[in-house]
Amino acid sequence: MFLATNDKIRTMLKTSLAQIEGYEELLADVVNTSVH
Image (cartoon, rainbow, N blue to C red; front, side, top):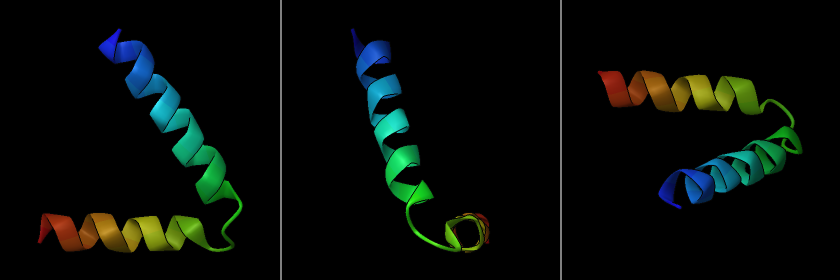
């Protein structure tokens, strides 16, 4: 059940992010900030 919910959340998040122009750069910035 958890995995199904997690997959649905991930799919919804990807769909929402795809509507934001330049989201890939934003996501890369978030990941880089989290790592450092």
